[in-house]
Length: 432
Image (cartoon, rainbow, N blue to C red):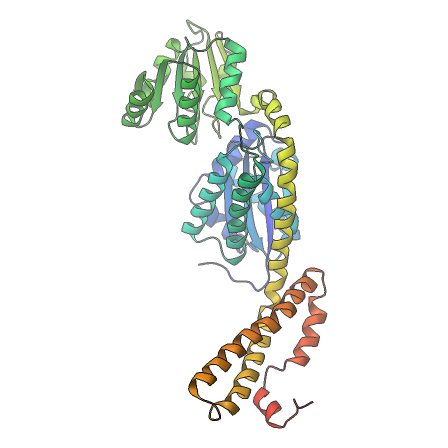
């Protein structure tokens, strides 16, 4: 059951690959992948709605609350406790945004401007999935529903009208470029892929395009691994064969969803027979970082892709500037929607007032004209009423956005009395 409050605001608490070390980000990300997380956050005092976004670049908690300025400590303390981390170890890496800054942040995220790979296309689907889960969990209400729906609409608009995603590289492509920098020609390499979801498919497609023919696919479901081997060639293995197969690999790309390391230092031989390059693009990571010290193993995480994608970031910069214009307009639209909600009862009152006036005038003519003429008069009255109210409604919303909503409301409540309208007109007080 959603908590109810008359006035609530947006806020977001998060960490990203740009500011937070991957080890801390791993722990914080794991908490958001727990199905009970949103219910736990919703139970916190002052939280009215919640949705969480967890990607390879970020971990973020979006809330609606009547106390946005006062809730940051509550959320950070919850996150530290839930992730079993010392509070002082995460505070320096967290950001907390409220009101328009929180709205603008989600709009920036969904437009892929804040992504490691500028213009990458996966984030739109990840935001959509986060929203879907929050809806299914029944932790979002009016405010976050509107925020996420408008964000998804904006993300689609940015891609269609700015070209920010044209020719862009994916995280999987960046991982492949890193492999080429480290190894050179990868076409003769035996490439293992751990995790066969969307990212795993992107990785397989990307390496196959580089003429790689020797694949090894690892998955909890061996049947899924066989489907990949049938599609891309190579061999299929269950997850429990992974460590055993490591000496036979040249490259391993890991992108599986898991709460703990799938490759633990204690399970890997101290010395590999051959050189092995591992690029761990999972979040949280799949590979124990201690393995980087083992002879023969070179281990990279998603944070190591920054240099690889810098060229892409320069290419997409102009499109990003155009996208920022869309984000600014969308943020203003959200603010207008947000402040106009308080006006809705008054707008309905004005609408009902004019409707009643029209009905009272029409009633005088009902017996004086034919049925056809009377129906034409009703249609005319309805159209005229809508056109008369269009400008006042628009201007009231603009005034509210500018901070003059209360003054406007007080004036209009006098001009449009909520009661005794029929008595008001029966006295002839509307005559000029």
